[in-house]
Image 1 (spheres, rainbow, N blue to C red):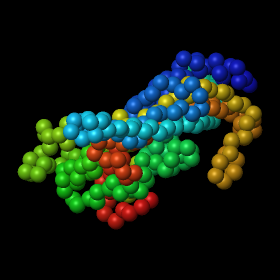
Image 2 (image 1 turned 180 degrees about the vertical axis):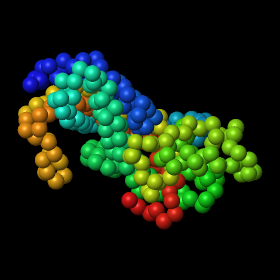
Image 3 (image 1 turned 30 degrees about the vertical axis):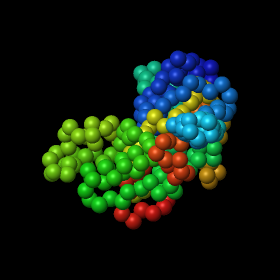
Image 4 (image 1 turned 180 degrees about the horizontal axis):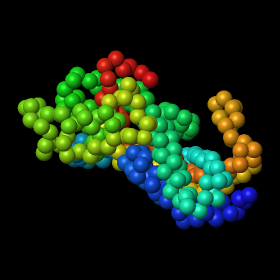
Length: 303
């Protein structure tokens, strides 16, 4: 019978690190957001301007040219590292089959699982740790930064971008589900011409195709993705299990009994955190400012 040591030897540590590199490409959150230096503790404080300083002309005839005072207040935005774990059960006969490229079998499953879970948590708030908040789309809806579809996609995207710009941010990309691809292919500008060298046409467009997008909640989001940041607390680590029982966390149902079913399981973990600093801008100092807005289907009010 294969041992944990033998199974672990099949997966070199430097190769395991490729999991996160591939997940960065597959996860739209990780590929679009700005990565900060790795975290040195469980929580990292980001300093974000909470009140912009104001400039004044000096009137020598009033108060003897006294200068007005201005303040720049700051608030701390925390990025909290949360652990994400993925377990892949493997039949021992697969491990013992020298003709099978074990890594080629496992890595795509791990990458897809990690990318999907991160995107679900970040964009929809599904399964997200409490420290990560409600998710970008629920936050967009809560702040009233939505535009309802009218059937004129070019105009709808423009109105959605305007929501972001009026908060003082610049739109860097558009993100939607795979159904958005066909809509873009058929999109024309306000003159009825195919989308070409326009600002909307030149924007980066990304499509979430890992199952994390809910087309019934939002058609697309437009935003300043530089104002969403993430940081890694711990690189990818792995452990091979051979005596564990794997349960469904929601129901408690036993999914696999590794010892009884002649299986081992590869458990991959890493810790990361993300945040949207949402600083005060020159155009908007209200609490409803936000660097993202969403185009939503007709009838969408809340999640």
